[in-house]
Amino acid sequence: DQQVKQNSPSLSVQEGRISILNCDYTNSMFDYFLWYKKYPAEGPTFLISISSIKDKNEDGRFTVFLNKSAKHLSLHIVPSQPGDSAVYFCAAQSNTGNQFYFGTGTSLTVIP
Amino acid sequence: DTGVSQDPRHKITKRGQNVTFRCDPISEHNRLYWYRQTLGQGPEFLTYFQNEAQLEKSRLLSDRFSAERPKGSFSTLEIQRTEQGDSAMYLCASSLRTVNSPLHFGNGTRLTVT
Image 1 (tube, rainbow over the protein chains, first blue to last red):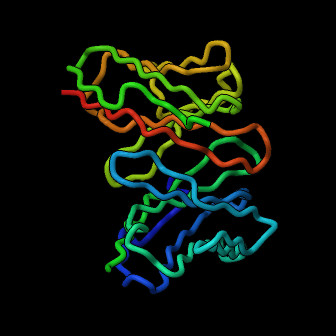
Image 2 (cartoon, helix red, strand yellow; image 1 turned 90 degrees about the horizontal axis):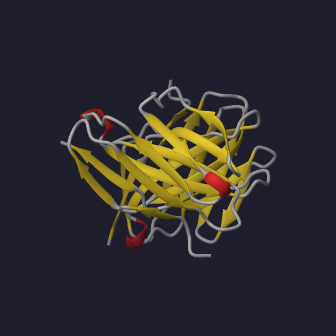
């Protein structure tokens, strides 16, 4: 059962515009959410996280929004740059366990 | 902070052979995780250590898989009698013990079973 879902396998955005990546989850016990970026032949790199007591967290060009009632989070990248082209995974951790659950990823292409 | 290190980066083996992978976590991290990733999928949890204790194992981890973390430092993941379905990227990650501590991944070991 896929507890973390990324329904868009790919996204293309023009350089300088906003990229919005979406993620949905089913487990109401999740209380910590993360976004990772992955280049080919490398491991995932941690980008930004948010705990369930917040609804927004910002770090430079990256902002994560959490809507607990909808069980939905999103990652906004503004402005998008060609170097942002990668696969982005969202992940979640339950307050009752230690395991992290990952989505299937969204491949972002930023067009110069 | 030298990051999480995994060795080897690539391993090609014949079906039925045993393979062992090594992971060196970030030195101050006492939590260590193994994940597996196949094409088009996100990382799937295999097992988790806190210091030297293996606290959680996925149902994905058949009895052909064994992981150890002696002395709570580096970890090894062994796959016995490899099968073609074991072909995947094996990722190691580490984190601090504190609440809401993110995972930091290594670059993985890509296993190909022929």
